[in-house]
Length: 99
Image (cartoon, rainbow, N blue to C red; front, side):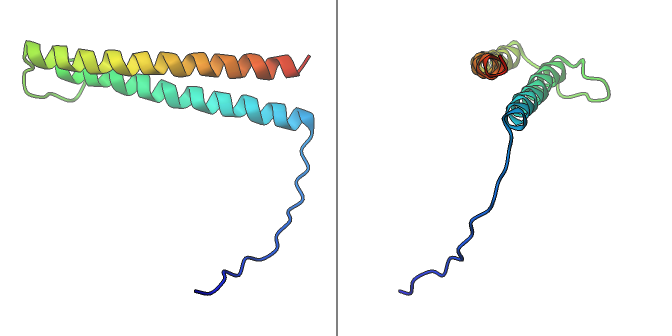
């Protein structure tokens, strides 16, 4: 086997403290945006199963189907809540840096 030829790259990165804080706040905002899309998708999933999603109709759902989807949505929301706690902790840490 031959050795890989990796070029010597030493980039110069210059970021101020304010830039770093702004990047951290932006990352939190983007994560929140992603979570909002997941919540919206879960809502649309419920609407589809219940037959109330505008423009789409599916087969009639049984009670078993509705309970199954409800359990799935509940679990997803539970996990999103955990993620929200982590983001809140991250936000608190970043905001404490500004002082």
